[in-house]
Length: 121
Image (cartoon, rainbow, N blue to C red; front, top):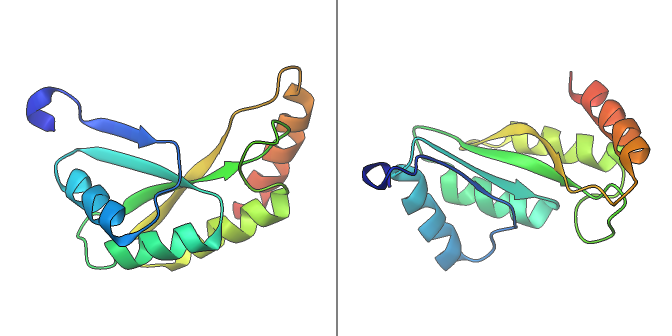
């Protein structure tokens, strides 16, 4: 995709299934930077398996559910555990935490993220 001028992509939803993971790996080979999100072990394990033999690890952000009640891990402890799992697998690397906060929920987000960050520092 570098030839199209798009060289840094974030895919903000979970990628599941061999076909989709194969296409994701192909996309990763054509971009300078590709990041995805994950909010559970099944997604992380699939990403790890699909990328275990790559030369440049895929960046994976932990999606945190900080009040919107849509998706993401619900506790900072779970976010920390998932970040550690990402860091332990070959082919992928922990890239940080991501959230879409609920309207008016900034205080909840701040506390959640502070606890999560403290657990991975």
